[in-house]
Image 1: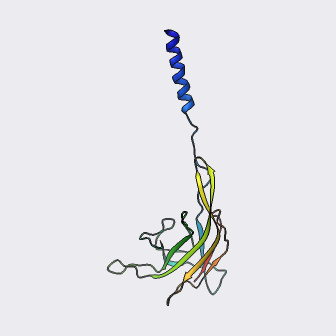
Image 2: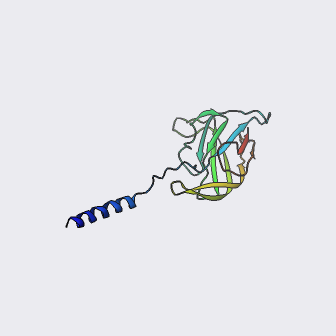
Image 3: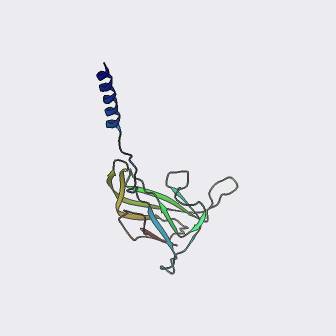
Amino acid sequence: MKNFVYSILLLIIFITIASCEKDDICVEGTTPLMVIEFFDVNDRESPKNVTALRVVGQGQTITVNTLADRTNLNLITVPLKTSEDRTGFLLISNSDDNDDGSEIGNIDTVTFDYARLEDFKSRACGFIVNYEELTGTLQTDTNNWIQEVEIIRSEIINSDSTHVKIYH
């Protein structure tokens, strides 16, 4: 009987140890953000802040959460969709609300097309998405504050450097 109890105890200890997994902590990275930098259209080497900038994903009702809303910025990072090959943004200069809460800033729409490349990092991280063949299109209207969109790097594999320059 004593041997049976020891055998059961050893079996329980073995099952407990065998069922343990190492801690999976993701340190290998995440899907990179696209870096957009704003420049003076008259002096193309000089960064230029956009006054009271607001960025909203096209078809969305909330602002992009990777930057402070309605601040003066000349560099932003924005996420691209990981399940589609196109992402659009409403870039709003001089953003403000009128009395009924409607946006009264100057709204320009920029659409980015790309190819997605899934990259398996590890069991902890799963897949991340990198992007290549990036192109950008400015929707023209009668009052564009954005004058030109220039793709600097058509491959997005990290968020360390500028991918897009926007001149205004």
